[in-house]
Amino acid sequence: MRKPPTGEPCAGEPHARFGGRGERKLFPTPIADDARNNQKLLQALTGVPEDKRGARFVCVLALCAPAALKGGERLFRGECEGRIAFAPKGASGFGYDPLFFYPPLNRTFAELDCDAKGRVSHRGAALRKLAAALPSLLSWVTSGE
Image (cartoon, rainbow, N blue to C red):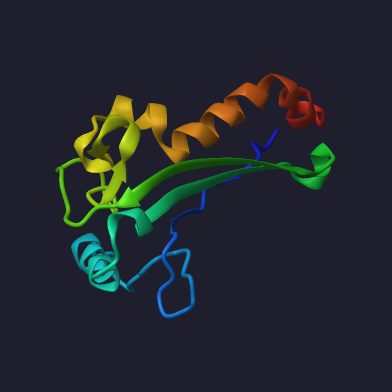
């Protein structure tokens, strides 16, 4: 039996709007350059006060079964609310983690260890939802055997 694929598109959603466009993927570059993207975000938020720097990380996991298994898809969305810091802080993580300040822990994601980040992150939330649904999905996924 073939295993169903999963997919995980993630994006940052700064609440402040940039030039009226309201980008969701922030500042992707042809070659991943986290430091450059972080600087672009900080420049775009120059003069924006702390109370207007709200942001969220979003993760959607998709579990899809082929037609041979009666098809179908299930989506599991996780979100994490925070705000964009005024300067990068921390050495862990990647992407916007040094700028994503998580108020309940009073730290950026780059200041958290993997376990702490997994407990509060958007990816962790989506994975916990998928894991909780797995028992009911097993018959759906394996019904083609």
